[in-house]
Length: 241
Image (tube, rainbow, N blue to C red; front, side, top):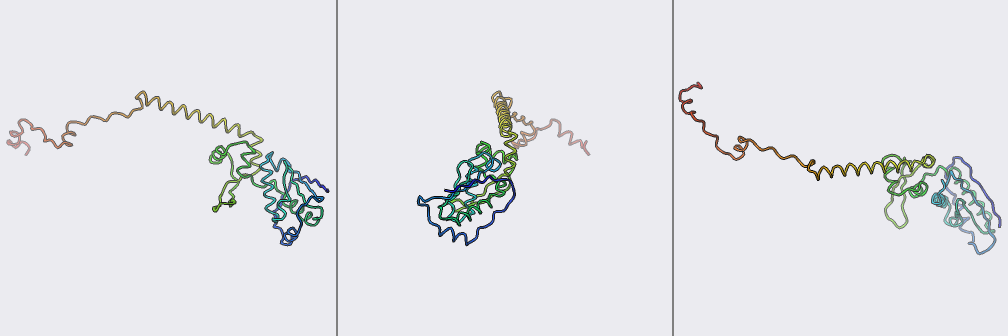
């Protein structure tokens, strides 16, 4: 059994589409039957996995998406190592597949981090991820839309720049954010308790409505105006003219 070890280095690259000829080549290869195998391994550095097995599995899925169906299961991951395994007799197919894996891995450290990966990397809950994304503490690198197997509708979710995630880890911002959230929650509880105490003591009760004047009551109840004594004599003497 031949085994090759490849350690990735940094760099930028593009994910190139695979040729139709390669698909035909792979489709014609026999399945494993216990015969001698060819094996090649690629060690994923910490800058790529960010210490997360979930991230390593996500990279595996990204790699398999670039391979034809016949070659997908030939590639697996163990810890932070990608492993390509094919029969000894599949020399050409093995070389072609290894070339694709190497090509796609060039620049893989820039692959955006998806929600389940960032939760595993930072050891945070889904609630925390939503809260910190909403208030801007977690910075979105855009959105991604996918169609899950067995679902008719597509789903859209935020993705994150791996360098931003790495910065959050290095500065231990998750601890800082949790302390800030706890202090804010405590302040909110104290404020709510104060309002409840005011309400119970009556200080927070609404003020009583003012008693209307007699004129206002008469106007509302349509009562006749009071008769002024001596008004007839005053009007008869024409003192107002």
